[in-house]
Image (cartoon, rainbow, N blue to C red):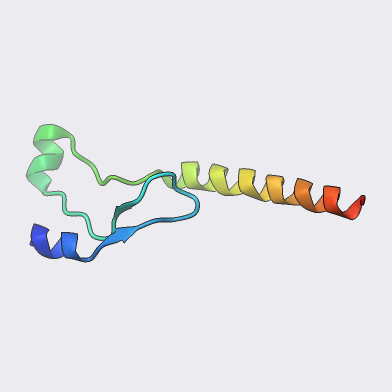
Length: 67
């Protein structure tokens, strides 16, 4: 099952700094015993990153208009 999940490949979002496996497997045992979680950014972190990129683009547009 883990091998099949790895074969699905890697996902790279423009809002996340690190690529992650498209399919990740975490067992209930791993969650309970090792506090393991899925390797992904929290949605709030992604939202903040997207908002920052939007601000940068808006500033660039304003600078372009002034020329």
